[in-house]
Length: 260
Ligand SMILES: Cc1cc2nc3c(=O)[nH]c(=O)nc-3n(C[C@H](O)[C@H](O)[C@H](O)COP(=O)(O)OP(=O)(O)OC[C@H]3O[C@@H](n4cnc5c(N)ncnc54)[C@H](O)[C@@H]3O)c2cc1C
Image 1 (cartoon, helix red, strand yellow):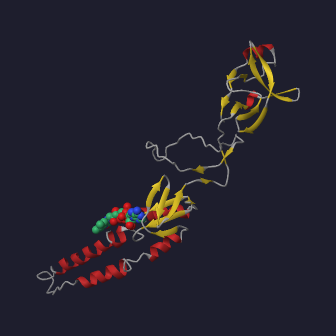
Image 2 (cartoon, rainbow, N blue to C red):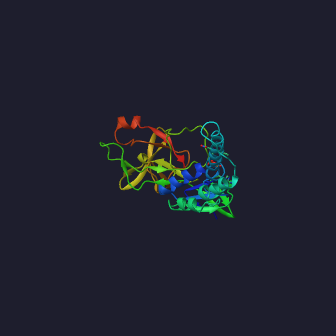
């Protein structure tokens, strides 16, 4: 069984460490996986050690220019102090303890090992599986605009499958399915009426509509699941056809549909 976390960052080089640290600081549960050293190439093998070597080389070259310009200098190159500085001052003997603590100090969980993608949102390291599902619902509701009583909660969702054509900052209209019901008959809420203390739906019969008593089971914000009284394919009125003759003749109708 995979452990559920918000984000898994595989590889904590310069980029991964920054991303993982920021997300952890923002309150997400983050697992950071690094096969070698947290910080990556730059501090241990790239930018920093190379600049120490280049600085040493430039110093030697400059010292060799003293003769004839500013006196006499004897220059005897030695790699040992350069190597010592890289080992002691830059890389801590290629030990990333400080960097690991920097990440865990932000709230991230560190795992040393080689990460492997084993499925959508699933990462395996050292025999453990982690399933990422970036999903965060803001705890405070926001007002859509000052005139509307409607409030909303901001949510962050992860895409199980990247459609490939999304751009950073792009706005999309999304439907969040909280529940699904298979193999049921559903009607719009507005098609259910109260008549003589009974819950009825007006079903087309010949050239008019007849009231049929129904029972309802589950409901969503827009639909009701019908337990009994209707069958698939029945055509029902979406307005009360008995309200008045003029309304009756213009009552719109639609078929009973599956699902909600
Ligand atoms: C000699 C040299 C000098 C450089 N000088 C400079 C410079 O002066 N300025 C500059 O801006 N850039 C410089 N660079 C480049 C710089 O080092 C890189 O651009 C930078 O390190 C890239 O960072 P990154 O996070 O993308 O990748 P990396 O630093 O390579 O980090 C990737 C990390 O992911 C880990 N990893 C990979 N696969 C997995 C896996 N499956 N599971 C777990 N961990 C994994 C690796 O171990 C690594 O630690 C230099 C590079 C070199 C070689």
